[in-house]
Image (cartoon, rainbow, N blue to C red; front, side):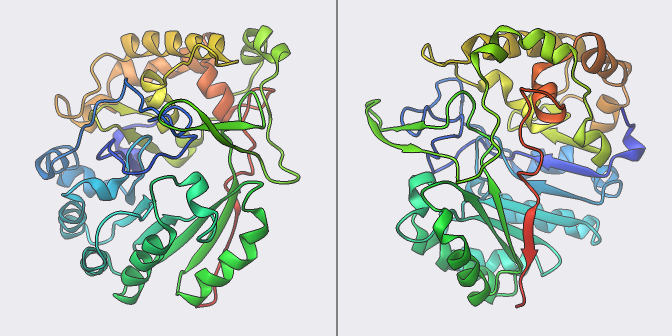
Length: 357
């Protein structure tokens, strides 16, 4: 594992609150009832200044706000955090991932002044007016687009991030055209990697009643976890070669609870609700058990109690990964950064192009 003086990037979740109810997000169950394991938390500006002090900000190349469960624009101190960071280190690059459905147009104009064009906001827009909200439940396409236009027209740089499903695949080119028309700098498209045991994902209402299904797009290379994989997952994990992405990127993740983890995938584990009808519930329970052992071995990684430098330079942090990438391999690591029948499609993130704007 790399040391503090090799750290280049930080992935931040400054809130786990969100106004949306995306069905494949673990903060709710299939778009319906909220996950009871998630307790709303927000970083304050003082938390941010304490954790990302001048030593940290002058060490890294940049950071990005993108939560496991929350949308960063819900945090009232977001703009002040960005302003503070760029005052300390003007060479930093900041990226904000958001559904874009909250705040007023004036708020977005002000954010553009704080984040001039070398920084970027990535708007998650999954279709046009008739399809976008089938996945981004609780957001309105027209409001998101108006917010994005306000940000762009005030001098901000924006990207359009499109998740392709069966219900919106026919709109990909139309969305790219709208992105070009309104000044987005980049349009990216990916398939969802969140189809686990079935390619018909139920979307439920607040009473648990079926509303419709989400399905992968035509020709998707989604790898479903079959019963055979569930029965033999230990052998599959043990045989996996883990090639850690964040190790290459020299990156850490800090949760809404201010805990440091290598990545968002490992950080989300304690809060993943396991439904009794989940076909992969046995594997999910094993993942939770593995995570508990990992946390015990790591000790206290709360960045309010210890500095980022002290945590990632500690003996426990530096040595524990050899164990969990080799003799006691984590299912989460094998699925995310391994090559096997459990792994997610590796090309899900790479379809994108700069727009001529």
